[in-house]
Length: 268
Image (cartoon, rainbow, N blue to C red; front, top):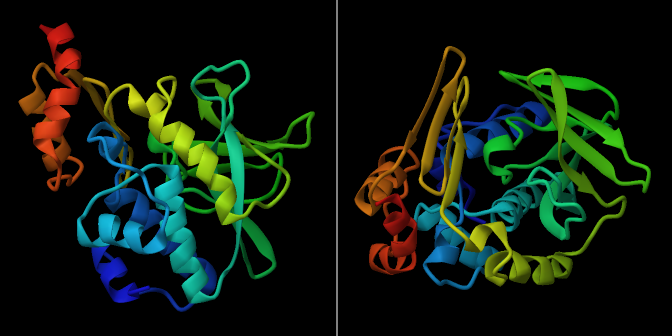
């Protein structure tokens, strides 16, 4: 693990001495600089969770990834720094599935006798900072409010306040999993035709006071006093947004254009 190169990638010049403050700084910086994105899936690449391959992709090539990639990268960094890290597996409810499969990875990190949910890979709803693992407690993070609750089947549900109601995001199994347990879930997520990530481009980053997201042709920018949404009309406009807003320049543009041609034919 080349920590110096990783810190340069996430724009951090120095880290706080306090283990908790250091964890918060890493988490916050990563969600603001390393985009949640599925472009490699649409480029036809195999998604590897090998730490060296992830380092090359995320740090050296300046790309992002989805939960299995981003949270594996964070876990490797935290392991190297001596944190107690437990890997978790869960189900995504945010998309409205009646019985979702196990397709989401998060981390449970214990610092100073307090456990925290860490997740830098949940797109437009991802945590900004580590969330104290205190069920029932409402935690405000900038413009977002999150809550953890126990479910009837002993899973732990993360929900986010949307308007006046709580929206379930994902539930986590009560047991810690091993690295190899992510292999089938990652294969499904990156290859199955029903997977959200094989159907169109997605990308997301947090900002100081909001978020920017891309879903298909819809680009949104939300902040404390603004909310903008527009539909991208052409493939060239998509590439421009990915570069300018998400910092994604090292793309296989030719392959993406071929695979996304239908998306923009619909726009015409």
